Length: 216
Length: 99
Image 1: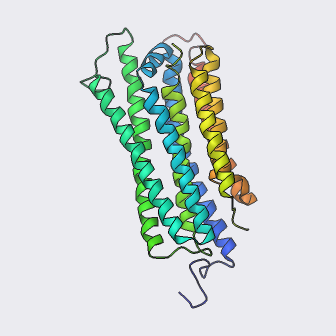
Image 2: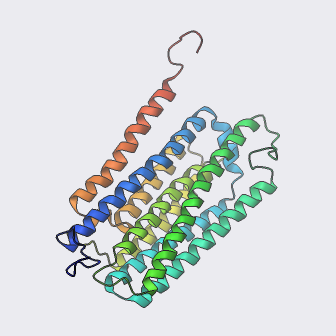
Image 3: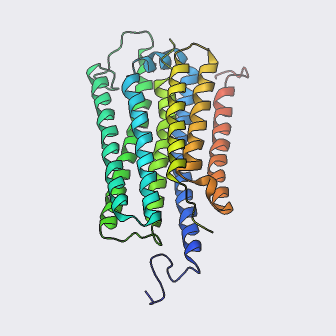
């Protein structure tokens, strides 16, 4: 790196603002790709639900709405603490940045804990698709399909949460080393984008898996 | 090309709005409104997603070119979804033999 280049403005950029905007576009293009990946699953879910509405309503009625709602609130709160971490990074407050990153990761872990509790409950109730699946209703096969979507989509979401926790760990490590200052904190902002995006996915998963079974 | 900077107050209001909409969405789901249930569920979820994208992800405060990229992602998804569902939902409309 030539002497004039800094983390906030590397040699290929004219200004720190240009570097930040470039990073922002790159991150949003990546998130658009993520929209396409989850989008395919949402469309597949829509097609199946349109052709088997009763079975999907029955499957949704087996969801644990209490755990689901609490988990939604937990995930939204983790986004708030991460937004506070971003705010602290912009202000150059490294102590608060570290604390909020740790808090966000802990709240994220609580979310995963509740999620796996739910998976375990469904497994115990023989709702997990596969040879253990057991349902006596006439739509059993379609209800199993509902649970295939449920496990695949919330599972993919959980994988994203685990990746997000990995990203936050790296950011925390770098924050402890003192890399991030009021001038340079782009990785915090765009690590945050990923986490908030995973939040958006959950908002839709909650709406399509937990809510349809409530008004039976 | 200044970096978007929101205050803690703005983040907190967005978060309170999100919690409120979650509660609203859950309560409405207990009432049977027929097909409108699905419309409202997805509608409120979309408003919540816009809140997250606009404020927590500060898309509203980004530069124009970034906002175009964000809108492009959403619009492409809607195009793909419309075309795919347009195919699946209209199958069986015409009485072709063997279908």
